[in-house]
Length: 152
Image (cartoon, rainbow, N blue to C red):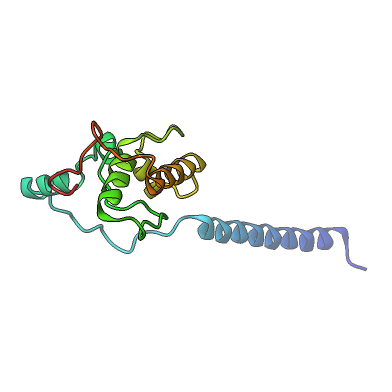
């Protein structure tokens, strides 16, 4: 029968091998958990020139939202005006481009229809305006915004 010292020596070797395997496993896990290193040094980027900065600033000029919302539109999205003669069409467009939508969007009726076809407010008001123009209830655009000369 093996002696007590022989068994404890064997147990010591088993413990050392187990500890070494544990340390190796932890080292491998740590290596795999680290983010990968970059392949090489990052490419150096030159400072932008004044011309490049000016060009970028011109391309990203802010849009005046009030002017955009009040812009003239030559058609009202989703509305069939093919039956209107030229004077009635002009009357309809002038009113649609002058009257504000009351849904709170800040657009004209024509602009609201262009940006939001689901707006119940502008949809109903545009249809009422079109019906009134067709029926001859609205016959004048005196005092109402005229079509801009530059077309926009």
